[in-house]
Length: 247
Ligand code: NAP
Image 1 (spheres, protein in one colour):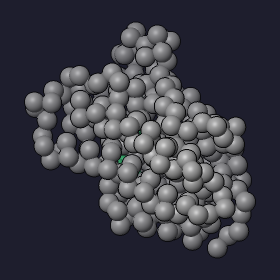
Image 2 (cartoon, rainbow, N blue to C red):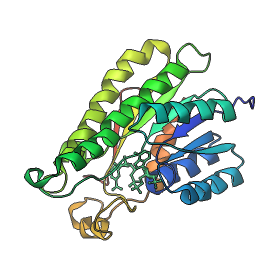
Image 3 (tube, rainbow, N blue to C red):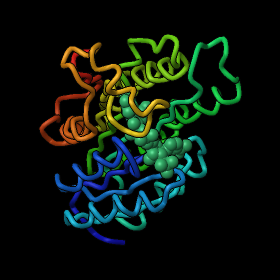
Image 4 (cartoon, protein in one colour):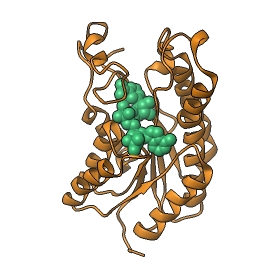
């Protein structure tokens, strides 16, 4: 096992979009990283190359965050390859079925909820098991969404509700873990340019409804995540930081 004083941070969904930008930023800010991805090993490896070029140690691990055994494998591999886990970015998420709730397929909706909420609980559960009782104080950042308060009507009420649950989980867990020295915070992005959207032009089409007049870039989320994981945020826990262009 590699001995290190650098933070060791697990980022789920690190192969693309916001997660990939978070990995690049955390590597630049001194973290060693476990990049969790579901299916796109080549994309994860491309992110890993960027991370290593910044001087960080890195491992890529295939994981289904909705599956407890798979999550255990992610964290065990990370600890074996990089050392004790000190941070988690709960980022892996899916859009799920689009449209009105009345038309949503129950199985598709359940599969989305399993990733968007149960997966966050499973990853946080295992991270806390690993972090509790260690000398290093840990930190968790959950990626929620502005949809948690906007509601996603006509698009994905189930997704927005799962993100509201992530906000609630952040508050509860932050209080549960404060005495253990583990901080738990949340970043709630607005509309960001990634491959997440069913209509690739949705970020442009929604720009007029965003007070700053444009959708955001993944890198504009990554900085907030890095700050919440850093010592500069030592007094921040239970925070839901909205980074949504004013939405
Ligand atoms: P994205 O580009 O679609 O990337 C999703 C990532 O999650 C990929 O790395 C994917 O891995 C991974 N993933 C999906 N299902 C998984 C599973 N079951 N287990 C493990 N990994 C899984 O999405 P994004 O836009 O970057 O979104 C990242 C987070 O930000 C999500 O939680 C999303 O809800 C949230 N968010 C996004 C926006 C936005 O406008 N984009 C706004 C607010 C919040 P593979 O590539 O290997 O499949």
